[in-house]
Amino acid sequence: MNLRFRRSGLDFSRRRRKVNKTLAKEVGTWIGEIAIAVLFALVLVYFVGYRTDVVGSSMLGTLAEGDEVLVNRFVYKLTQPKTNDIVVFFPNGNEKSHLYIKRVIGVPGDTVQIKNGTVYVNGKVFDEKIEAASIEHAELAEDEIEVGEDEFFVLGDNRNNSEDSRYANIGNVKKEYIMGKAWFIVSPLKDFGFVK
Image (cartoon, rainbow, N blue to C red; front, side):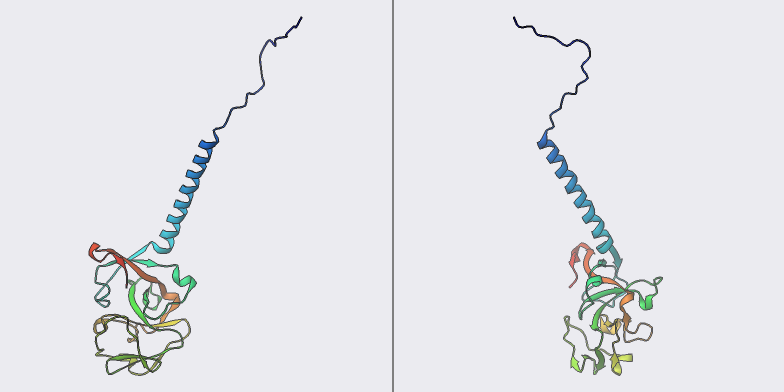
């Protein structure tokens, strides 16, 4: 004779609930993807999200007045500006001024001179990335200008209508005044794309 005893009263033992492992993995993956997207957006906005307008016609041929340009603020934390880079900077570090956008011609250690309308770097004709007009006014660059440590000699692409390193009020641009590299035109849509 087999007697079975039955428990009576309340049962406080917990029943284990089965966790749907597939659902947990999927939720974990979604959370991870959202976190990565948010991190990417924050990095993009901080380092590249700065937008500025082109003021004036000094960069005509490459950039026109009113173009909206994204500035890569990260690139010069890793490297130095190179010749033919288009940099965005505050003239003489004056943050109350509008940002200037110019092309790097001379880097630290270079000598720059303008003779007979032509730019010479270290005694040789500068290898232009653009088709630039003959320069009518050499100004300070009539004599050789030595580019100091952490300085850059810059010119506008519209050479005869540009306030740049040829003039005493701009001179060589210190690296600390350079905000970043102009790298993408966001407006107008007809010019949408990378700055060349």
